[in-house]
Image (cartoon, rainbow, N blue to C red; front, side, top):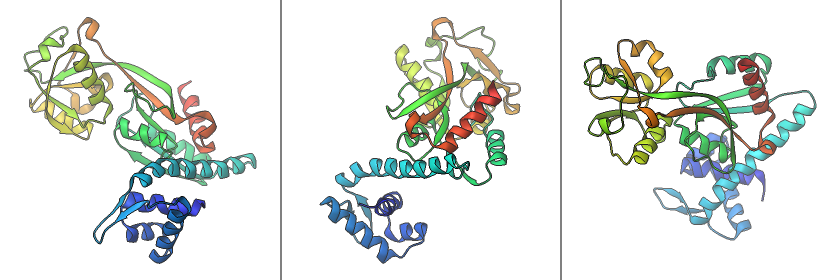
Length: 295
């Protein structure tokens, strides 16, 4: 089994198409197909279920995919480690982040890293916390800035960034806008505006409502902070948000109401990384800059 074969296999698995995978890798389709067949012979099983219209993973292929990604990530980390010993930091740094993470200014941090290590190619992926933390665990991301949702994979470690309360955000004419605090029971029949299910605020809110034994109506789902604030401004629903969202210009004039007593929520942002032995030199370099900026 060669690393090249695993790289080809992962590309086909992610693209679900041999032609697109070959274009992505800049190799011939016949060479790609031959490498995948050789890998299947080595393993003694089919990895893809092929039809004239689609390419899908078999059970064996799904089992191999996570391990192949980790193996390729480990191989890249090994090469980068040797370069680091020689006084060089090079290769690729793949970073994931959820929108508007408190405790780190991601653009500024990446700019500082680029100034110091211009030979490292930086790649950034923005998505929900659940997804990017899983991608750290599978080796697709070197590290991620995410929300601690309490279900971190065993292959991932987290380092704290900051904690803040979550608040109810509503239009100034809403019935709860003048309340000193609000209980979970008062939110039972409210229409909510929230993010998709893998985003940190949504997961923290869903868990809190479930723990309180109260269902809620999420009628409007968005994938960016500004849309959420605009919808609250139009009085189309209320939102449960981390405190720093209320400082954004789009939140001006809206009302932020604390949650009552034992119902108060802590919203924790973290840096998610592989375990120490699997963390790449580039990720360690970025983490060092982060610690310097927050010390």
